[in-house]
Length: 298
Image (tube, rainbow, N blue to C red; front, side, top):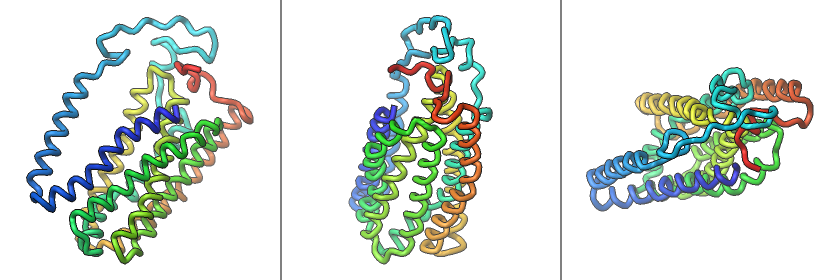
């Protein structure tokens, strides 16, 4: 699962890596109309690709009804725990989703502010802006592959969630440090490191969801997770637009990093409590039972 998560992130991030650099070059050469038209075409292509996807559940191929579960580690039937799965009763997963959404909402304004910070405060061209913003996605790819082995070795879900929270804190620290740079090129190593930590956290979240959610309910689980994080990101984007009317970009970048670190510190308490409750319920070193093993292949 860690390798699959890293591979998935690589496929998605390669486009995100090339996109800002390509956009910077296109805007510099043709203005904004041509890249926006290409962007619209890419979204239409994405819709077409989605319509062509076939899966075992909901696709053209019928899914055989699984045999009745023989024990707690067997695949649940459609009428089993997958049907009634909810996020809230799983304290560890709930703490993971809440902490990630909270931090994304706190630091998400940087996605609006960075444009004005790099272009106006640091006086960079559109080409430099595209190249600099490509550093973070490149770090995500490297971090996903570099930290995938760690998530495989950490079988304690509570400790794995703690590692994820530390990685989130590192991302916020990278944003805070970037507020002090005098040149846009100095952002490249800082954002490479921030992206590396971001990629590692993404793997942690994907692995925890896959471990703890029954296979048949994973689509719903990822939908809940994505809705929470994307909704928080929308709040951050709206806040960034409002804040730019009140202050200059550099102090706002510093504020984003600081608020993000405060959010990580605030969520550390419920994360630690959830991890302790998990160990108390399962016993030291014991793995999660049915939800973790449901549908997994050795």
